[in-house]
Length: 303
Image (tube, rainbow, N blue to C red; front, side):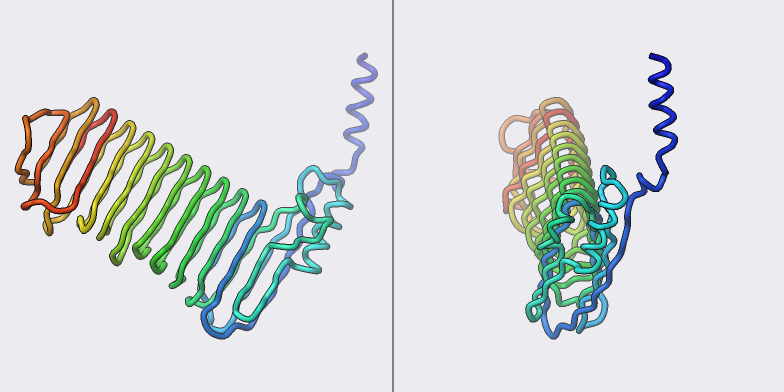
């Protein structure tokens, strides 16, 4: 038995290290466009970065890796098949990236993309597993990843972000805005006006610059919300503290409740019903849109 184990060990040591080397390659393409651009990008596994550049070009840089379980020759062949014929299609100002991979590369490579586009670009981007970052686009942006963080910066209205597991950060992103994650925090500094819809299964939520309606939910985590109530707000955490700053403008109809915790308010409220440390209902500045805030376990702080 000992001799057999020793033989296996010696054979393993004798295998060249290059046999397990992970094949890698790159490709670059520059496409000419004129006017508003539409980009649809997908990758089974890999990071995606999209930023703005010149007004008449889409520049694509791809980094291709073979799967770790492939031997060197097969991995190199799969990578070469992609780099020699990148999965890029153009029809006028519409660009598709990552579709129609060579048959020998499907399910056997991961591709990360760095894409530079005009500001006047609408984007759909999906990664099965990887981080996504987008900056500077003025038209619709819709991104999703099965697992990985999403970072958005300086975007126009109608941005939508989704990740199965990861955090979502948005800075200087115009409303309306949508962000959903199965597990991770959501942090957004918003501009303009419109509704926001954010949800995480587990993680903290922090929102600033709201001007419109709001739906904000977390299964477990704190919620911090700052903005102007211009339509209905519904804010809920299964377990965590809620801190809300609703500005000094229009009024609202407020209903706050906590299963286990206290409610503190610095807002003048005309109370309806009996006073209760776990529940508060009343009108602010004569009433207005409905604002409902709740936590299963935690305090509520209203300012």
